[in-house]
Length: 180
Figure 1: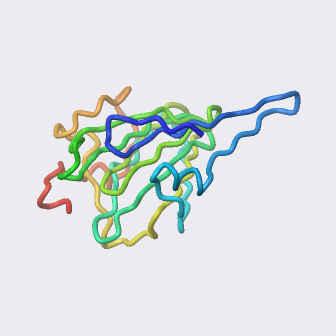
Figure 2 (figure 1 turned 30 degrees about the vertical axis):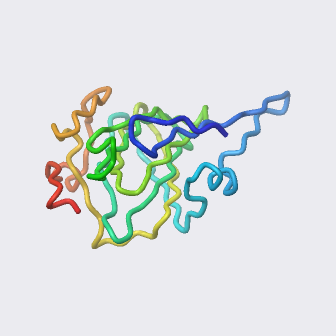
Figure 3 (figure 1 turned 180 degrees about the vertical axis):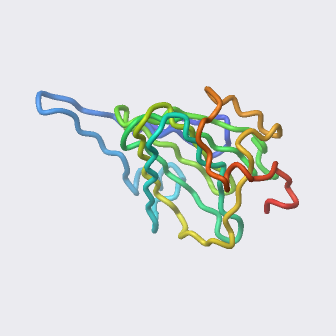
């Protein structure tokens, strides 16, 4: 595996090193010792799947607040998405910056998103599925979110989403005081 730094401090694109032959392909997508050696969290007590039927579906931008912020390792198991992490850590050198990666089922890459960062994605084609490994279990009262089009971040989405659920569409703009 190769860990490629992004514009968000502590966020990495995780690229697999595939080996192919006449049978097909094999690649290691996760190894706890390799992640620990990189200084990344090697244990994920919760895993989630997000299935999305239509191109243009936006989910996010979500995070879990203190005292149980989540680290996420996200990968596309079907389809292709524009995946985004936004740094909401006031003491971070990349505070309010964002990083994106195109995740797809063919390259088997993943996005490691550190605690204190919010996450969202936009589907680039129909029939997408994402698999999340989470460092914390979900705590509903700590769930938070910010607007996908918040001018505080100025995320360069590839196109305007066509499907956003009511909850995500109603999220407010970021404010350090109200989003902790």
